[in-house]
Length: 142
Image (cartoon, rainbow, N blue to C red; front, side, top):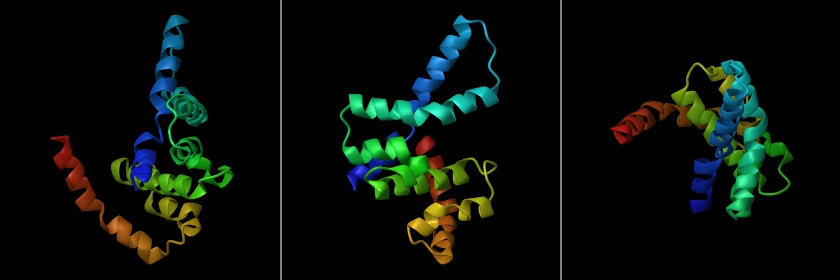
């Protein structure tokens, strides 16, 4: 169970490194970056950079694969279950914390639910916890 928590905590560990690198290079070159360009760099490189960090930190293979493949878990060479669970957790967290990122039907249409054998009533149960989770997050933020 602790490895699953570690997958969730570290799945996007490459994002701060990519963000720092891109903004530093842009500043050195006196280039203004549009938010869409920054997001493109983040989306394109954070998993690879995260994989390098996982190797450098000698993280367990399950965690390293979740970091490198959570968004493309179908391509995970091993530990696909961990990558799928991390993908699911990422999508649910994004849906809860950034509700405009994608709507309810887009969330439900993702293949990760089917791949994890979750049925519509299971998804309803998970989404029904929204207020409880948001209250917990608010409590922790204080």
